[in-house]
Image (cartoon, rainbow, N blue to C red; front, side, top):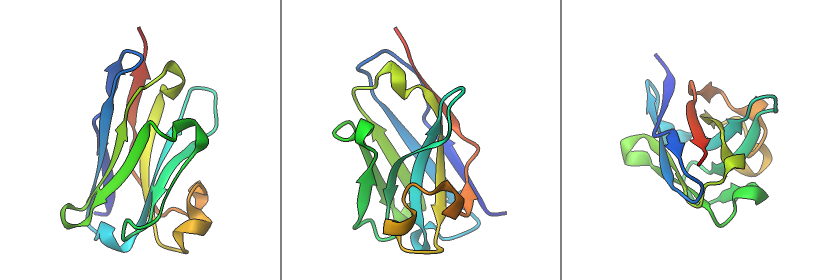
Amino acid sequence: QLQLVESGGGLVQPGGSLRLSCAASGFTLAYYNAGWFRQAPGKEREGVACISSSGDWIKYTDSVKGRFIISRDNAKNLVYLEMDNLQPEDTAVYYCAAGGRTKIQDMCRMAALYDYWGQGTQVAVSS
């Protein structure tokens, strides 16, 4: 079965940190570009960060630049999202996704171009 499973979400206070992990099973994640998306209640799904299959190209949405870091360990079939200085506006369900239809530069924040999705992990930032 081909799937992605996220973990690491939780409740943190403003200024806190979390590290999300995304584990792939049933396929080799190294062959795919990967991205993290989030969806807050009443809002559309938003692309947060993406990384090329080799890890040599990365892009972030403006609101998380300098606070979030996306990385991957292809040997372990894992993608990570390190989140620092979390703020209430970061509260959302976070999803990881993988896809290989086109180059990462053309698909980074385009949810429709990703083929595999995790079930999501909740991140809540509140005092």
